[in-house]
Length: 93
Image 1 (cartoon, rainbow, N blue to C red):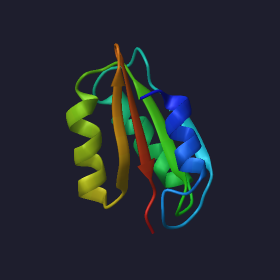
Image 2: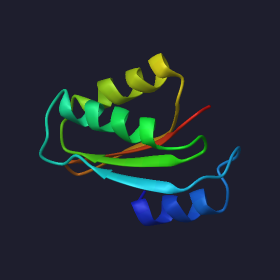
Image 3: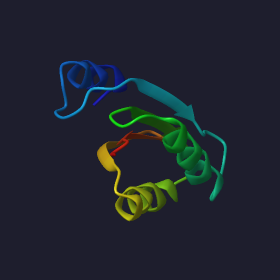
Image 4: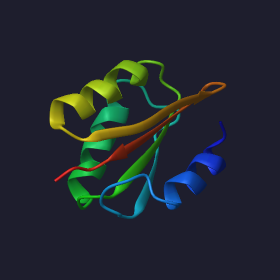
C-alpha cells in the first residue's frame, strides 16, 4: 500500500479525535535516535495529532510499537516499502 493511498483514507477519518499530521523523517538514523525523535514529536503534539514516521532502521519495527504500547499512544498503521518503514502514531491524551 502506498503512503498516498493511506493518507487519503486517513483524511477520510480513521476514527476518534481529528488532529494534524506531523511528518518525522528519521531515515539514515539508528537506534535510539528514531524513537528519541518520535518521543520529542509526541511531546510537542496535541492529542489527536498523527505523527508519520519514516525510518530506515529495521530496529524501529520493534522499538516504535513498544514505545506506543508503553506510553499509551496508538499505532494506527505500520508499512514497509522496500527499505523504508512507515509508522502512523496517534497521540492519545
